[in-house]
Image (cartoon, rainbow, N blue to C red; front, side, top):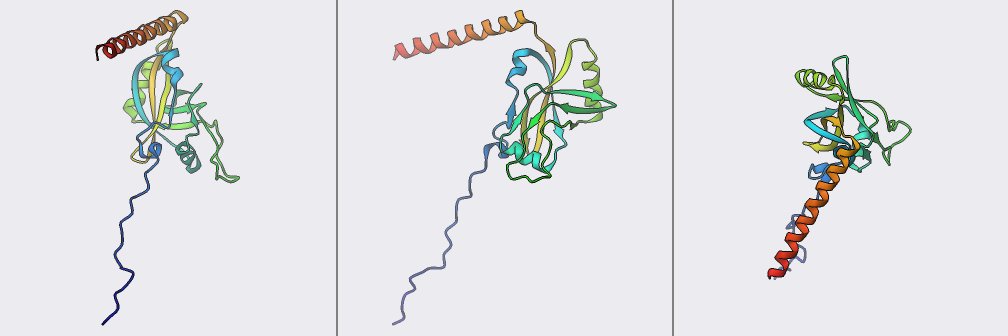
Length: 177
């Protein structure tokens, strides 16, 4: 009688390792939270960003910071200034500079439109978030108008009133049951 094999050659399919939510595009890599507090965001545009390899890897690690950054239009091209992308952890001596000026990739018509809107006094280009779409790094730019101090206080009052209203509704619904 032949012996039965103790090991079978059947391969059990493994579940693929879950992808990082930032790299998969499910979560933003960086958000400029102070932008909506300090500015009225009028119109938003999506732009590609010309980056080096270590910069992309650094953004995937979550080392991007958009605070104090802004965009400019110069000679028919768009640029992102003061966006901090930290050095890549496994980079070598050829790692990128953290605060270098980066080119934004936009269509000519979008650049023309942005140029016209930023010529208006008090309007500027502010990056609101950096995220991945189909493996490419994208930057959301907003044409923004600066807020005065009283505008900021009004926004805070409105936010506080909404918060209290939501809490009152939640409290009344929890009493009902």
